[in-house]
Image 1 (tube, rainbow, N blue to C red):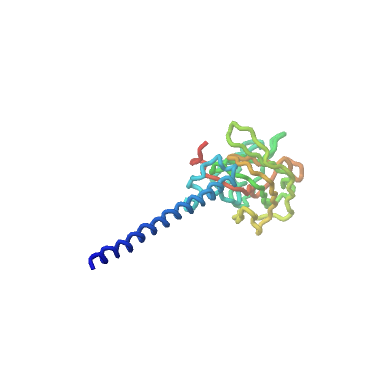
Image 2: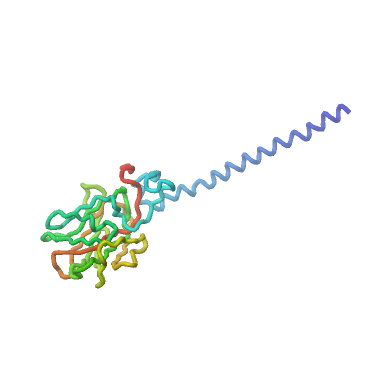
Length: 238
C-alpha cells in the first residue's frame, strides 16, 4: 500500500504544470510581434506632415494626432495682414467666419489680397472658396492666386492660380458661415476651386489680380482655404 500511494501523485502532478505554461508563453509574443508593422506604416501616408511631430497633443487632445480636415486652414487665431493695397488695411474680416464684407484697394501694379499665418504650424491647402459680397458685383474677383511658404525669409511658392466666376446673387452681411472641408455653406452664395497640392506650408498669400470691372477694388465676403491641418505652431519642432 505504501508504494502505490507514492507513485500515483508523481505521475499526475509532473506533466500538468510543465505543458500548460509552455503553450501560453510561446504563442503570446508571436502574435504581438507579427502585428507590429501595421502602425509603423501609418505616418508614411501623410509624408508632407513629417515636418511636425506626430505626438503633439494640442490639435486633438483626446485622440491621436492624425491630421484633421478643416473648412479653412486660416483659423480665427491666424495673424492676417494686407498685401498689394494702397495703404495697410485691417483685413481680418476676410477670414472671420462670417459674411462681413471687405474691399481690397489695389496699389498701382500690385495684386491686392492678404497674408495669413495660421496658429497651427503646418497645413496642406486643397482649394479656395470665395463668398459673394453684399453688393457691387462689378468688384467681384475674376482671378485668384494662392501661394505658400514656411518662414519670413523664404520665397513664396505657387500652389494654385486661375479664374473664378462669382455668381450674380449677393450675400447679406454678418451671416455666420457653416462650412466643412468638403462643402461650403450651401445657404450662401460662393464659388469654389479645388486643386491638387500635397505640400505643407505655415504661411499663405491669397491675392486677386483682377476684378470683374477691371478696376482697382476687389470685394469679397469671406475667403476659405479648405485643407488639412497639423500640430500647433508652439509645439512643432523645426
